[in-house]
Image (cartoon, rainbow, N blue to C red; front, side, top):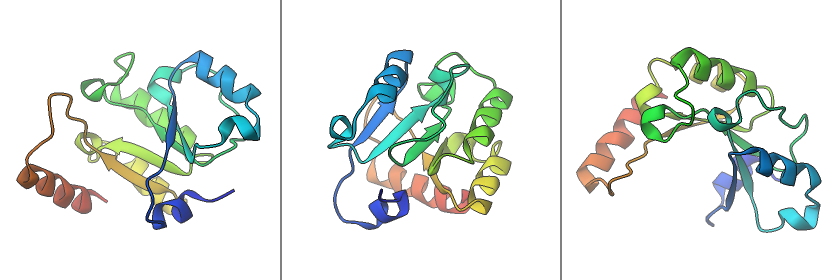
Length: 147
């Protein structure tokens, strides 16, 4: 199985399958290698899967995220709850996705992920439109500062 680092170093786009409900976890449990064909990475939406039993072993690299409610997070989880979910994912996730808005409050999680050799994605979600190029450049600069 290719690692996430290897996949990210390539020049092709990646196909990510998002798991955000119990049906997705049931599907994954029964999925065969052929059923996963075409997917490169899985994204586990921990905010939507909180309290559910997650696989002990994943068939593909996994991005774990527990989204902020302001960026599409499910269940209005507190920052402390999101921190706990992300910390619990560090041993099995290939990467953690933390919103840029939460990078400072969750700096300890970002640091732990780096210490364990995990990729950290600092994301930004705008549900109204695509920010201007100048705004995007500012977001990139801020993400670089935040790690």
